[in-house]
Image (cartoon, one colour):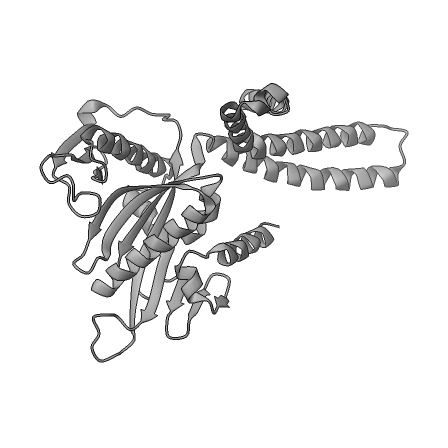
Length: 352
């Protein structure tokens, strides 16, 4: 564990607390927001490090007491037992710190969301659009920034695939629960006999990285330009503004077509490429980024679901926490707070 880095973060944390309490900084809205955001990004690490140091001091005091030949034997036995408990707790905190410090180049304030139609044909694509609208409505209510990277529409205005980013305070820890298979049960608009169909959509959520710990060499990239089509591309048919970037060593491909400027599309595509490549390299068991996606979303089969949206019963069920809500219309319209709060509460209880 890099204690020098932890000490530097604690020093910076103390400095930030001083700055955000300074009236001159408070009156400078831009600087104040910048410092508040940085303070929030490192607070979990610093507070955990302080807990680590506190327990380390307690263990040291107990060791000194145990070495005291004049101390009562019964008290020494109690001290040894307490030391053992604290040592176990210290190991746990140390592991948590290692994880936190290894992720300091990840921005939990920006995510990449990938939604793909799976089982169910056109109805699956239509539901992919519904989920995209649900997430963007939710993000808009939070005042978060949304940017479409690329999309592939169907004839009925569904999505075979849509990739977009969302930026907002701690957005990853809100949206991370959405990774997986989402199942819908309803009568499709294409169904003449009125039968209920079951379809699935896959969702993957990746935290955006905020700084690059590795370099991508120009010769490792294949960059293609083409004319944009579909969402965002209707104004771009006369120029090759869309960009597709392939990382040759890994085969990872990213494309962006939503911007009118080729340069802007290239910039966005590179951000997504770095994020995907980073997430690939972070996992020792990955052969490609699709492996990580499969861990999140499975194969897309109907049985592998995290949540079911049953329209005839106006019911949404999250199978991970075995909870059903009978306000499906509101949920699909972006009212996700109750579901997300229940999932966070469940995660906290398990952690405890």
